[in-house]
Image 1 (cartoon, one colour):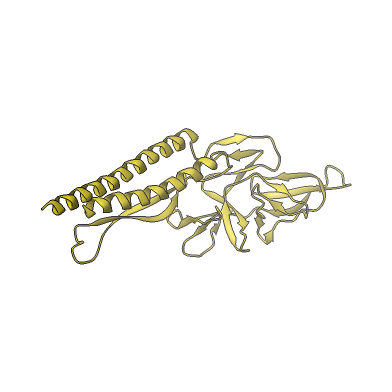
Image 2 (cartoon, rainbow, N blue to C red; image 1 turned 90 degrees about the horizontal axis):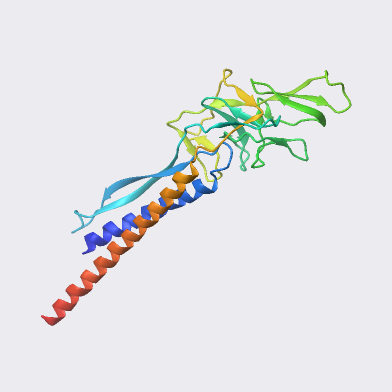
Length: 246
């Protein structure tokens, strides 16, 4: 009966991991530029005397669906949608460079250009800082221009340029902070041909309805695996009772 117990136990554990990813996907279904996550699973044979026929379901690493989301026009001058397979460079909490498709940008109280998660947006020379301005515009190549306060509308000053990069899709992994990095530790490849569309945002690539259906199915699977474990226990108890009668 322990073989049945292994099946139920390992299945329940990996289903819990899948549920965590599904819940996170649903929570972020409306987050601009969010990429849905999923866990990979592997079958691993249990090692040890008498266990050669026992197979464990082992949770692998979390991966992200890199498909692009829909582009929605907002008309807001600091909203940007990155075209194609490009990524915006941002500064993570550890001070290092990381990558995001979240384009709901704003200027914080210190003049830093940040995204909706309050992460500083990087330019070619580090975080982009803007002077007090009456107008800010972002060009298709990522150039950030401002009209300083007190200047005429024709006085444009280039304040920086968004650092746009490509990531190797085989190496792109999402950290616990929700930012993408390359698993080999190398930075993304800066690409001059990458473009952004100002006044637009890329939506999450998570379909809320599909995410909800996935959660319901996972809950049913988890319940079935618990029943398998309970059935194994009942069978073992019955066998123990028969042995006592003998």
